[in-house]
Length: 502
Image 1 (cartoon, rainbow, N blue to C red):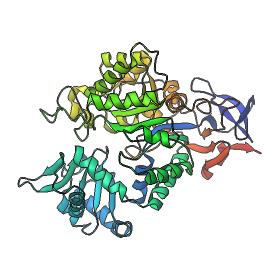
Image 2: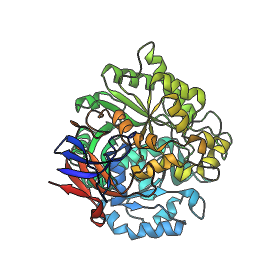
Image 3: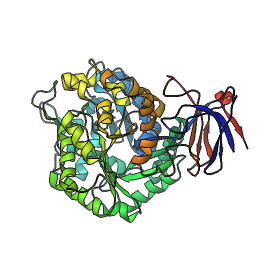
Image 4: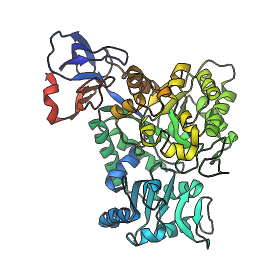
């Protein structure tokens, strides 16, 4: 195949008229003066941090984003009642209580009015708290008889409202995921793969499973990922490093929770939340547990990834890595910290010395950053210290771009723009740095830079064609995507940008 356009062979390169010759791999990049009207050819885009099962389930069940009131939310759930009955449960995604007219979570009674007969589980947009209905509470009680796990909210009489945070949320989420039929899991993963390809993506970091996932369930997940339209690098979210080893993987963890999130006020902070005095969030694991996981992963030669958002949680992750690093060189296994959103200068420098790789989500700032949005409400003036990409890059920390889908959509072009147009101008990155986050740096974080992340002979023919250079042009669109030389997506409305010959 011969693809002609303005080629950007790596994140630092200027576009030049060229023809890319490829089969399964890149064979040559030939100068092509006078290329005329055609697309911009960039390395296949990479999303280093997705939850592909949940992203697909959002499409199969109910996306509640944009709901303005509890009545509107109820109507949207009512519309999907028949689907919930067919699947034996209702899942809802992207609930934002702060943006509802009532400014609160719906309660179980309000869910019962529209979903009375099957268990319902409605995720807050950050994926760290939820609300369930009465049938859902009964299911949880049957699984944990006589136990009221921490985080199960009660009303003034002590009766459960249905709102779940912390341990209660994690337990309930696991119960609902175990109820998913294998065909539902496979369908969800296929949907996510197609959605990712349509956004220019050729590879995703796929964070899947929970700590008590069975081997049969792991196999359904791994096989489902292998059949997706994009290349997938699975991260099995279990503290037991023997599990990924059994499946022949080279990475362990993912969103193994050191803490929660700002939105649910469960991210672990050094100082209290501005809108919840006395609440400094939640630390989910001890140093002993984290150290044991990191040590066993290193001994097995596995890259480890953990979730830490608040400064207290990130410091815990860094502290444990420091204890294990000793005088050893760098970070040869490319251990990752996911999110790492609230950071001071000293913490940044410590991460740089360790060589830790950060999995970051620039779109979070578009959604919640700035002086008058959720980060500011939760953190006060500390919003200026969230996601300090400029400071991190200047310190030499490698940033791998991602979406945390379904928390924000898989959309690297939008992610790049978010990194370049921050609410805090002191943390803006250049177009070249933004493109690297979703190409070469993401490939490095996934240990696949030998085959992807740039367009050069010998690498896999992972190519994305856009209408313009994403580093300099807002609103550029995806024209076509090739993964390993096969076209996985083509926008028929933009074929004038695609000059492809056999």
